[in-house]
Amino acid sequence: MKHFITLADLPDFNHTLDLAMDLKKNPTQSEGLGKGKTLGLLFFNPSLRTRLSTQKAAQNLGLPTMVMNFSQESWALEFEDGTKMSGLRSEHVREAAAVVSQYCDMVAIRAFASLSDKEKDEAEIVLRSFAKYASVPIINMESATAHPLQALADAITLKEFQPAHKPKVVLSWAPHPKALPHAVGNSFTHMMRKMDADFVIAHPEGYALNPEITEGIPCTTNQKEALEGADFVYTKNWCSYQHYGQILRTDDKWMITPEKMKLTNNGKFMHCLPIRRNIVAADGVLDSPNSLVIQQSQNRIYSAQAVLKQLLENG
Image (cartoon, rainbow, N blue to C red; front, side):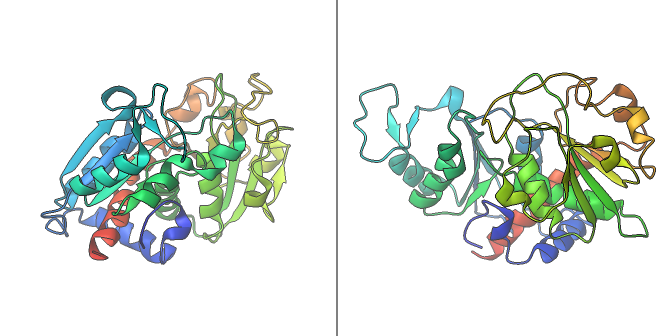
C-alpha cells in the first residue's frame, strides 16, 4: 500500500478490519513501531473526531504528529499547473508537498468538496496533487468524494454489533440546512459491498448518489419500506448529485424518529457525527440505547491505527 486514499488501496479489507479489532483489544501492542517517524496532519477543513482520533491512533503506535490548519496557518496553495501565480495563492502544491515530505514520514490530509464543480471535486485535486508531488505516503482523512477511515470504523461497529443472522443495513438520506458532500455515503456504500449483509439505500427523488458507485445496489425512494426489518440504520445527508451541490428539500419528512425506528428489527442507529439534533434525527433516537454514534466515534481510533500500522510496516 503506497497511499491510503480510498478503501480500494487496502491490500486486504478483511485483514485490515481484523487488525483494527485486534488493536482495539490492546491499543499499545505496537507502541514502538512509530519511533523515529513523524505523521503530518494537514487540515483544509474543520475537524473534531478525525483530528483527535488520528492523533490518538498515532500516539498508540508511538508516532509523533505535526498539525497544520491550512485555512489559518499556511500560505494559500495553488493546485493548477502552468498557472501564473499573480493572485492570492502564494505557494504551489509542487513545493508544498515536497517540503512537507522532508519533515514528515506520512501525511494525512482532510479536504472537503467545493460542491460547485463536480468534475473538479471528483478529480480529488488536493489529495491527488499531494500524492503526485509528495515522496511519502498520503492518507485520506476525508476528501471531496471519500471518507475511508470513517467507513472502516463503521465496518468495525457493524461487526461488533452483528446479530446472529445476516443483517439488513439501510443507508438513509436525512434533511440538513446545508449542502453536504457525498464522501460518507460513497465510502459507506463501497464498504458495504465487502460485508455479508443485505444493503439498501433510501433517498428522496433527486438525491441518488453517483450511479457508478451504487450500481447493482437496491435503492428506493420509500424510506419507511426500506426501514422495515432493518438491523442497522445509517443516516446521513448529502446534496443532490444530479443537480450537483443543490439542496432540493429541507422538510423533516425524512428525519429519523423513534416512530420510524419501530419499523426496524430493534435496529441500531448509526451516524458519523456531527449531527443536527431534531433535524437529521430526533433526540429520542440519538439518546436511545440503540444509538451507536459514540461507539462509531471510538472506532475511528482503530480504523486509523490499522491503516497507520500497515503503512509503517511497509516502510
